[in-house]
Image 1 (cartoon, rainbow, N blue to C red):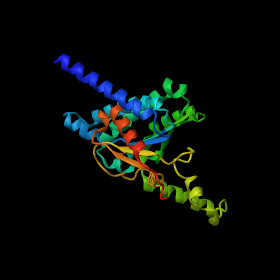
Image 2: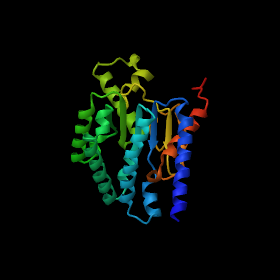
Image 3: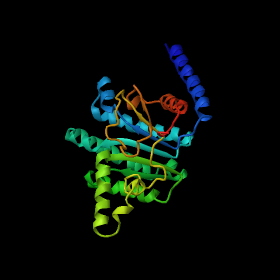
Image 4: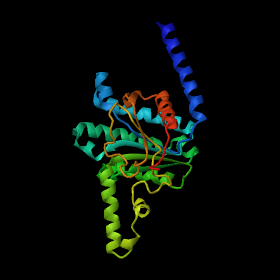
Length: 260
């Protein structure tokens, strides 16, 4: 049994190296966005409490950061918790917030973040989160505010429609106060008021969704107009490097015309 297991591991590593060689010489992706879906279903299939799925999913995020560092991806945006997710049971939400606090506290002193000058940002209606978590997020953002080598965004308490509404409200307020002329509003101006305006490349090259679901669920509705999409039939906690490499390889084979 052990021999068979080691053989499978060896074959996996060989396949991983083969994929890596294919991907590393292809088109480089600047911005990858991922909808981290399937934590609860993973827990259910493994007969575990839902919060253990979220915990395992958070551990997978840490692995993802290493992979994206190796692939030299400058922008990574992760859909972790939507505004609609607040409809879940109070117990599950409490566990998710506890895990989030634990991981953001770790980011404060994460050697990779400071070594690689990673700008960490939470995009969404942060004011809806528990006060302690809001404070911690503020500390992480302040500690990395001057970094610009890489960008790590967590879409937390996020909704794509909410983002557009919030941008429209800010613009309307500025027009009302005389700070902005109505004729000056165009697509470029609108983008300056989106949650992702701190990045020079707001549009993801590739959006990946795990768990087999094939929809965006409100993720980056404005920014995703010309993003390539990859829907993977794997729950997020089981996401592996080969899943990422396969998605990138598929992206590299596509011809992007941007409507032309």
